[in-house]
Image 1 (cartoon, one colour):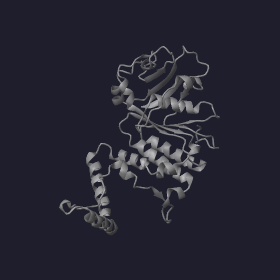
Image 2: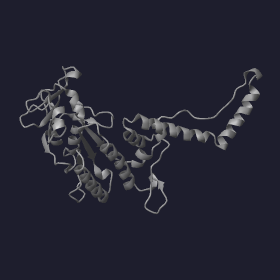
Image 3: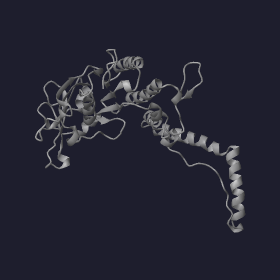
Image 4: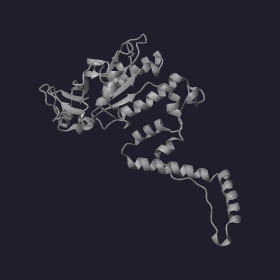
Length: 329
């Protein structure tokens, strides 16, 4: 399946906007404040994040179009087509139109007298019928790559979050693979405690402990570490890179453009391994904040090639940097 069209009404600068998306890779080009980011955020509002990050929320005060009255709803409509037979079976109750397209509409009502749980509505089809199985929407997801200002901090920060996310995706539901990695990693860490210096520290502490402990209450002191889980182990790992024949360097010395490219690569891993969804959208905002024009061209060519091999769509919001392949956000 693929996302064919998005129709937005009363959402920020999109008073009434319809965007037809190309098959595979779509580029949004335009001047500042023309609504490109609004289109990307509309997709984020109406699809779930495959990274299980905090979802974007709708604010009636700031997200409704300035000209819209209180009686006008904000609506975001997504139209999908080219569903496989298996996908048609999965979305059987939502495919209510004669043309066999799948149409989802997410509505937001700003009326102050409505309780908050009634301010959002989910409908299907051109006739806006009630969605009998709203959970099916969770089969359509997105991976969002925000404007990136400091790739080194994101990749090489002490939290190890980027590496941890990649490790989690590669492990997936394979519990045996996860436990094997944790067991082997913790055994190696335990070997550190058996090195000469840690044991010398243990002996020094134990000698003083023996002197200040009553003879009847003797203790045996050992040194070691607690068992670390996946995210904690990831904080020990660091991505390093280098050109052929050159000694690897820390990420901060590799150059901002290539550090950004490494960050983008971690996102693409998440995209290519997102197997729990019928469709995954890669949303890239302001690619010029990630890469120099030359690297943007290389990345877009790569993404276009990857789309041919998968069922995933790429939607980018980027800058017109002098080439038709770059998108504007």
